[in-house]
Amino acid sequence: MTVIRRLVSDSKDIRHSTNFLNNQLNAATLEIFRLKEQLAKVQKDALFDSLSGLYNRRAFDGDMFTLIHAGQQVSLIMLDIDHFKALNDNYGHLFGDQIIRAIAKRLQSLCRDGVTAYRYGGEEFALIAPHKSLRIARQFAESVRRSIEKLTVKDRRSGQSVGSITASFGVVEKIEGDSLESLIGRADGLLYEAKNLGRNRVMPL
Image 1 (cartoon, rainbow, N blue to C red):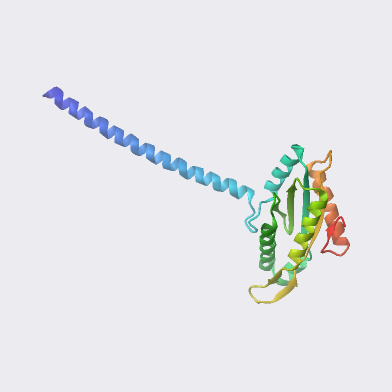
Image 2: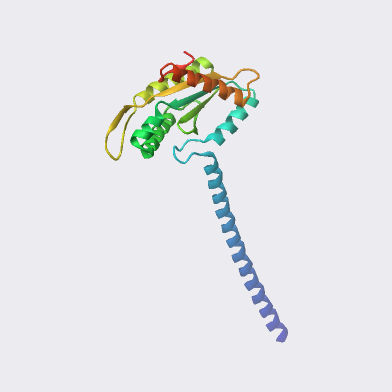
């Protein structure tokens, strides 16, 4: 009987140990799941701009670098909101944020066929157009320019409309020997040429 009692006791101890280990395993599994969720959120936050909801500069650099070094045809569109500093000064930074979000929403609605929108920084945005020639990318940029021009933004606090918002564009296609820096430099050069010629236009003509 003593042997039987000992076996029964040992069996109970094993069950208790097994239950304890199962509980520990379940807790560890849940913690791993939570950590994976947190990691996914951190990774997402690292690639997205919180104000506009678009991909950010870090995502842009990575995607553009990959396309350039893959030897693929790609065009780049850089655009900058016209008179943004004056709008900020006259209506406040919250209104400036409102304009950023409105432009971002419009870009998201227009991007298709592999074109991706990014907030490059400040009031400047970038559109990466894989497998698109300069001619096609320029046509797309012109359609974006016209669409932005139709935007009417009102100050949410006062209800006052500032009229139409416009943007200037520089469009380039990757050529042999281009680096990320040279491609962006050429696009920015055309963008500021558009600014100097009166804004609200796409360069090259």
